[in-house]
Every structure is written in C-alpha cells, then in structure tokens.
Amino acid sequence: MRGVEVEVGLRLGRDLVGAPSRSDCIRAVEALLPVVEVVETRLANWSESPALAKLADFQSHGALILGQPSAIDPATLDLRDVRAELAFDGQTVASTRGGNPASDAWRLLVWLAGHAEARGRPLRAGDVITTGSCTGLLFAAPAARVSAQVLRLGEVVLHF
Image 1: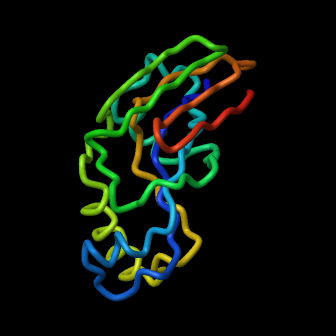
Image 2 (image 1 turned 90 degrees about the vertical axis):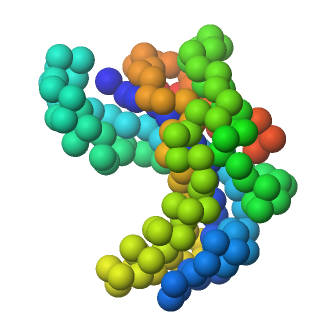
C-alpha cells in the first residue's frame, strides 16, 4: 500500500538559529514548492489494524517528492486558503481548500526552529520543511500515475 499526501514545502534561504520570531521565519523562507509525501505501510493488514498502530506506522515516510519552487512570495502563505488537488491515473481523488488542519504554517515553523535547535540540529539554509497533508492520506494503485497540484504553486507528477 502506498499512501500519497499533497503538501506545501518551505525551502529555507538562511539558517534559523536561536529563538526566531514569526517575521524571522517568514524572511528565512526563500521559496514555496508543491510536495508529495509517499507513505508506505509496514503493517501486513493496514485496514484492520488498531488506530494507534496506524498512527505509529505513518510517523515515518517512504519518500518526499519536491516540485519546482514557485514565484509566489512566501509571506503570502495562508494554509486556510491553499487549494490542493490529487489525481490517480487522471481521475481526481481529492480536491481541497484549506485542507491542512494546522492553519498557520508560521506558528509551526517558529516552534520547529526552537525544537530543532534544542536538539542540536538547527534548521539550515537549503532545508525543506513541509506543512503536512493538505488532502489527507489516499492510497494509489501499484502502477498509478500520480498528479498533485497545489494551485498557484505548481504540480508534482510521479509514477509507481
């Protein structure tokens, strides 16, 4: 089983060290890009597994596929307005607006920067941080052509 999620990526253009503010984080992001996270389960019978086992299983991912950086000003990112579409073999399987439950990417980036620094690995220029799913987790067939579109940001296409 291969799960697919459409996400927004934030690529850092400078290090985030110390205790960065919201505006520090916004200024540190050099580009927004569309992202697909591929999640491969380790559970033999995922659909019948207990909810907590499923949660633990998906705390890791199989791959992160990055689209091209967009020309959109990162400061304009508002997860409540992000529109994402996901298609398998040309068939739309998800179409959302504001589908990411976090709502505020900048609040999360401030927290992540502090968390990473406290553990000895501050966020560095070139790192790509993802927002988490904008479409929810959907499962693609083994040979599927996957197309993910984040409106205004771009598209990511892959084949299994």
